[in-house]
Length: 360
Image 1 (cartoon, rainbow, N blue to C red):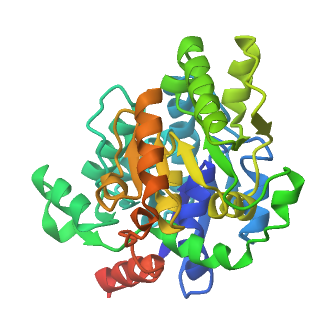
Image 2: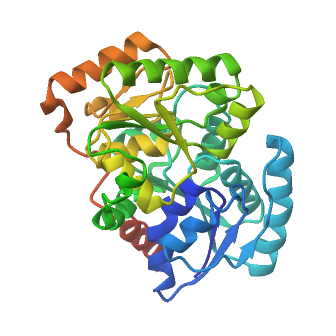
């Protein structure tokens, strides 16, 4: 088989890492098409290096832009590559504009689409990602659902059960690989010790593109940290930094903004944090796998398993909800002993087996 893997962002690189590794050691012809949706070195190049991935066969250098403009440029460029390479299957992962563009181009060329992490739903149609993942699921031939919950969602939407496979989440593959390499010496760089800091990540437009929302979040998180004498380590997304500067926001002194970090360092910072505050779906999963409680800085989540097993609590930007959730985790340490719902770290192996069995 000739397999094309289309990716473009940091989370896609991480979650396709184990699949790429297996394919490049297999009998299959595998090409990587990188849209470069994430293009800064801190969000892109460092991850290729740390994950020891082969260089992309095609780098489309799309960069940023409005949704329509970005997706359109991606589709034009991806179509040229796929027409040249004549792939049998296209892999996409998640819910980005890269996923939407790759899935639409592939299906229009008659190429089968394999959607990794299929079936996630926030049921929030104000999120552009919701449309991307729904469309990818409904044009896909192979839908790799992380858990039975996503399989049930896909069946309820009328998708043929024969196209849906519960494989676990490939994030576990990556975490098991890299959690063995953590080095707590990193904490000295930031002047913190184990369990004596909060880790914060923020990047969603609803949180960082609105000055009032962004200021409120930073102030409420700072207030919570001060109450418990914790520092806040904040590896800031370029989009967030840009808006902090644009709105002339002066972050509270106990929030320490640092440059985005590589994956190994991010796993280290998560593993030794007292608690993680995030609006990222992937970080919710990682925190859950690393047994670190998570406060979800959103009003909903497409990872309900995190909430169900007690690994996370939805708090939005509300200080009272943050305080209550933190106290519940802090008072009863047994609340941190949940079962990881995302699999055993062999998701990539299952996915490749399913693809191979389908053409045998």
